[in-house]
Image 1 (tube, rainbow, N blue to C red):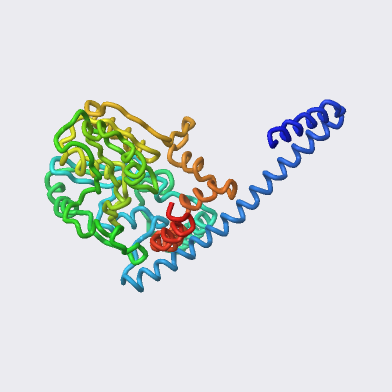
Image 2: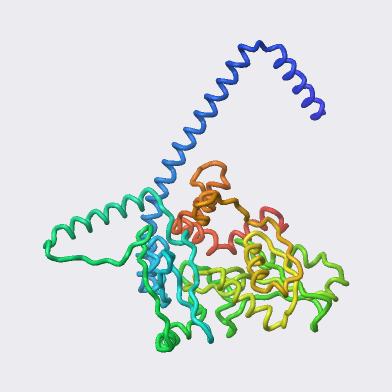
Length: 397
């Protein structure tokens, strides 16, 4: 019946269009164009007002959380809206600048390496931040000009966006000094007051091993092959173990070793507060938790979303070991030439618009650290209550 009504309405509409004079069709086309342009202007205006308010709210929450951290934990840690140098060096890491990009000094048993940091971690420009930075710079300029003209202020060569170029000279003496400073860093089980303290979320703090949580199924010895499952963002190994694993045949489980991991910072894996969760950290933890202890020499990878990035990185790092890649919903974006990729993709994913709602949510998560922390304080810290209510409403489905 509903299909019949739809067809009937479509036929009547086509009849109306056919008999409509060309003049009326032209007027209708112009009207639609004006309405579309008006809607776009209104959407841009509302988005500007809303996100300007969120800029101010995030700044207020920044000071509010710093005060709460200081009262409860007797210290406050620099947030991502602070400078990269202040935030990174306060955690005991060494920050250097190479070709205008900030990098962290990492030390292994055999070599010294520089680890890249995404420039979107500390570079998220907003109306409030731009005004505050310009105001501070103007005050500094006035202060410097007010001093005696005989005083010369010498600065290092500046690179784009105010970062300083540094020169790093490596020698055996420096390596020995660095070994004493960063060689003994570990994933300290430090929980914040705003984190959930349930047994599931803090299980990693009682473990003596600094490895990821791994759900392994299949033969104890090496079977026909190994398959590594990597989940995506805001997920865990349950993404695979509660959907795919129960539906695998007995023959599959008896011939293949299946590994589903909780990535660093997710599920029951470590969530160190001093970690930057870089690509290299994720890869190192996967190697230490799966490839080395289970003696995985060759394997297949099945990955979803964020996990696709790690799967590709593993394939590049271990080209002779990865037999196949199965990528589900990989985050792929085209980047124009001459444009900084990370900033371009961030504006594609989170363009600071109020509609559609998924874009609005992504914009809040990507641009506002403290608003996101407030939301997590309500949702994540009380996840047991929300899980109970969800099961109650859905009748435990």
